[in-house]
Length: 209
Image 1 (cartoon, helix red, strand yellow):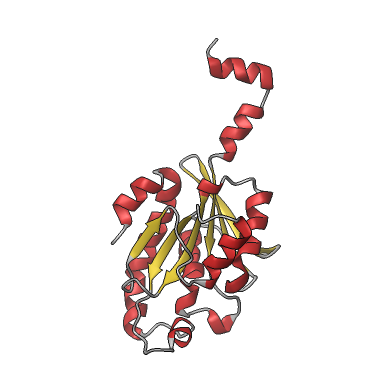
Image 2: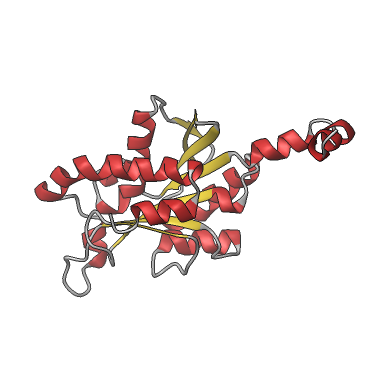
């Protein structure tokens, strides 16, 4: 009897349960709720998760602190969350669903906008500071760590001094809207790659794309 079978015999289903939990991933898209914000740059996290859900034929349902859905893909379970707490309080929803679903910290991916990256460019990181992003700042405070993976989608920085808020809460222009048709499916593939291939491989494949 090998070690794994011996552990299973002694501890029953506990080993399998732990293995199952490590195959669960919480993907959180940041944004603001309401029609006013639907097509704004700040809501790219919501938009990317909508793309993932559409590709995997699942729909969101309103639950505690957000809209949520899930699907299985290549043996992994992906839980998609769009917090309803508004951007600046995103951490409350992340912490609640992380605890409820017993998601390991390394299996969490936060999807957000970034004005310091050229439009449409993808950048995944294993950790880091909030970089002035209030949604990430609140998540860091609620989780009490910077050690969580984040997926930054570049929205560019084409705004004048003091107009950053207006820019990120502004809607996509015609050119950006056209390019999103290509960028959203690529972003969706990066998210499933995070669960299937791991963060390091996903970074190597998609960063800078």
